[in-house]
Length: 296
Image 1 (cartoon, rainbow, N blue to C red):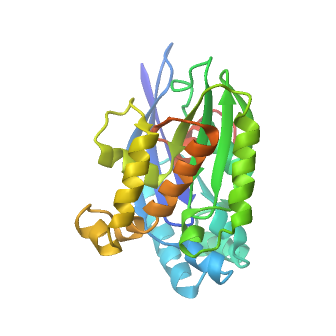
Image 2 (image 1 turned 90 degrees about the vertical axis):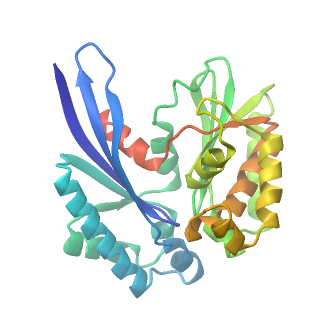
């Protein structure tokens, strides 16, 4: 006997917002299966407002309300029985963040929770990582967002340490990440990984997923440091327009992919990692699993 539950997750990031709808297939005596039913991504760059001006602009607020109304209708059509909506870095920092949450509840009937970096890292880490984590190895999990980057260290199948830094792609584009932040990241990575002989990176976020897709590799294979370095040089050699026309990148991906690659490369360099694995996971996947297993 198979039972199917429909859950949804809304991830309101600094570069885009996503609605993920998942079919959870339950069968007696078997692990539940999480099958993606639908994923909608809307390129609303809230970070551009929040990090430069300090508030969400009228224009983006209107676009956000429209997106949330659409998300609500899509959940209705899909007969979603439970959802959660989380906002990260941009909404954390916008001084009108709470007003935006109240307005969206009123206009689109969607309840949003603004979460801190630590909770964000914990939710992402609660995704299905166990099939990737070999118990006798050490991994640095790096999730690059528009406003912040979350680092989580795993060793022997256990979480050792986690930290969120205000170094995201939208901030880097706006030259808002000072050297002191890079120094802190370098120090944190080196201190936390120094006792381990070998560290492997696990990357999550839209940009690393795109880089992986461009590599043409099969899902279980990692990207090497050499490949990442050459891709970084290649992307930098192209203009913004060329990255859109020749590589087929979305306009809101073609600029942030370069600072994102820089973050992953630095994390690899400072941890001594030679490879990075790219499982298809992110905050929205984490929200669905954390909801299902009663962690949030």
